[in-house]
Length: 237
Picture: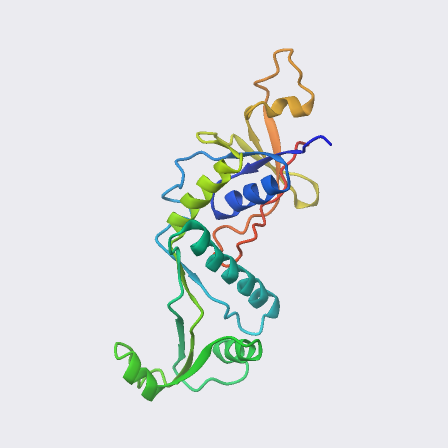
């Protein structure tokens, strides 16, 4: 069976994870980015990203966060370094929590799903977190399983993993143009990438430097909880 070829545009958290998953499915994968990698100005490579499962009454997003948390824990073991720090996340309100509040709905849903959470009163806040103004924040909760990820280090580690799996990394690749197609599809225009112009039938004939239009499907752009990338496509028109 002939292997499918794919180009992943952008090597942030979504792009590099998409490249890894495509490679696991035995695709030939090229990961392209203007570079350097990790890029210091990319949304997914700043110092840290909060990782939490509190999303109000949104069960779907909470379920995604639960999945991602397990992957963060697994990555800590696989990479042999703590990239996700499970130090907890404190949510407080300036009045008592009540139905309809983000904090209240988050607390109830996490409680229902068996998360490790604690209701925090102003008295507990003063005793445990004296830097907070306990008089101003009388009610809230502590999500003990939340924390933060060292996002820049994570991207660097994942890029190395992608390369070890056989993903071909192409830095310094400039995107010349972006087009909007039918059904809100997006395409980016670049130059020949690792021989992929042959995939369009340009077998010789001086067309190896012909432009390539790569179909781009929505990326989640630095959303730390959504480990499973949305940037998945990536075929020739």
